[in-house]
Image 1 (tube, rainbow, N blue to C red):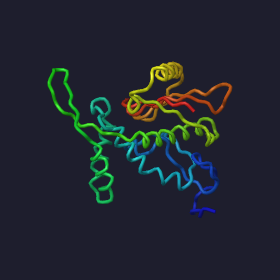
Image 2: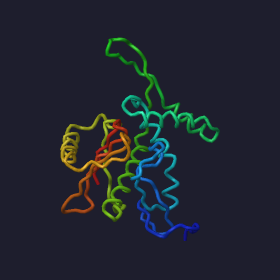
Image 3: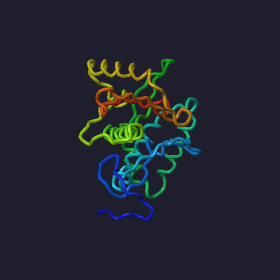
Image 4: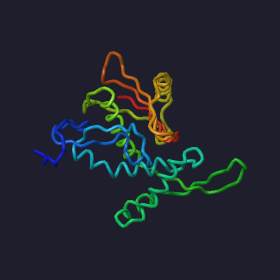
Length: 224
């Protein structure tokens, strides 16, 4: 049996379903919100393995998703990105920083004025982004529906950020999902930080649709 820390509670982990000592995990990751943080942040119960084991992915997600932010449109997100980059200089982050830098490359760009230049882009790891988004969906699902999404249920994720070659049939399907979600209430955390909409199937409680929006910069459509 897992060792219980002083002050911890016994419950069911939202992610793996194991019952034992749990702590509160922020959904979406707390590091996406610069201080002063919004007062309506969501937390869900998570075991130590699932909570602590995701920290590296959360940090990767923050750096990746804030890359390319327009400081005039989202000053808080841009400042958060700069802060995260500065933190890469500390000794314990050197290995992580080298991995991020090795994923950057130059691509040719033609400006609106017709000038040729090279711009730096980040070759992202879609698997790591999808792991974070899957955790966010599982957390939001539990928060709103008061039960965890069964472990055998898949979460389909589409974003034009890392799935630009989506087949036309799938693109049309997700366009319909997006239109369906547009009528759902918009839930916001902070100003231009994070917002989402969701709908649950009337006949199947574990079938749901979600639209996630980070910094008005990256969006995801998800179906459970």
